[in-house]
Length: 322
Ligand code: HEM
Image 1 (cartoon, rainbow, N blue to C red):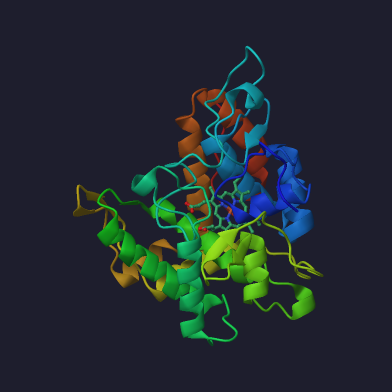
Image 2 (image 1 turned 120 degrees about the vertical axis):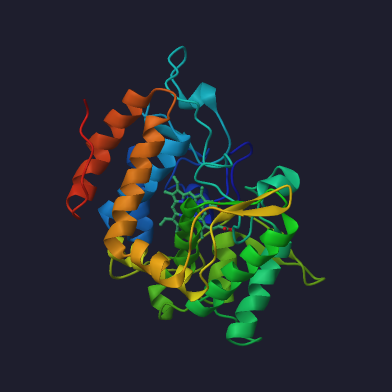
């Protein structure tokens, strides 16, 4: 289904699909509770996964008091309460927050100021990579394809984006890439991450000249979600395995000159990215971002109430309100 006129849509095909089908408000302005329910009901992720993903969105881009977030651009007048603004409500599209450089099908922000819209040229490159790792007739968007394509995207960005920023936080994008083979494939199709499935979730349509255009993102016909819920360990091992296939140094281009951010020797990388380190690291990151929110105590209260029970249960040391 096409999105309603003026509906907010952003860089996340998973959320855009949910809004296009009405599992999130079709206008793209949603709440914490609606998002938690939609992620579980449609993608069959466990409650802790839904909380971790949604909370990452909120600390960067949403309002902790109204509990509203835009899945597209900044909407202060609808995200905050009139006259009561407790955040800057950048929305999921805001670059330099949850949205970072080196995506699958979105530009780096520096290149044209739009890092949220679907880019058919990038989608076409992803298809070619999948053809090279599986077959030209039936490209599969599996682990091998996504590991290689992320590596290629990184290498391209190092050369093409003189202001590339690739901090450790960019591991999020590895998580997003695992969703192509962990949440999008249909259990009714034996979880095959084929082109029909992936193009539908990305809203990609092939034009007569072979290039890729865009329509509203949607679930493919007769799609059925995962039978087993995706848990936090699946997500964190998914991220570390995908990263470990082609480990890339963290760092930044500063006017085209590469500045490394820290050491990424293979063993150091693996040690730092054990499953519990990744999960508790994500929690620490949520707290760190909350502390820098426009109203840090409102955000910290929101985070401790919603996320502490989930992360304490997996052994993370959790923050207490002063
Ligand atoms: C199970 C649920 C979800 C699925 C299946 C999903 C899927 C994806 C995929 C496949 C991408 C990569 C798009 C690309 O690089 O071209 C992505 C990107 C993104 N998603 Fe989601 N997502 C989910 C939940 C969420 C939530 C809850 C949020 C925030 C509230 C979110 C925010 C983002 C952002 C900000 C990006 C852009 C990252 C970047 O490219 O820099 N996602 N998502």
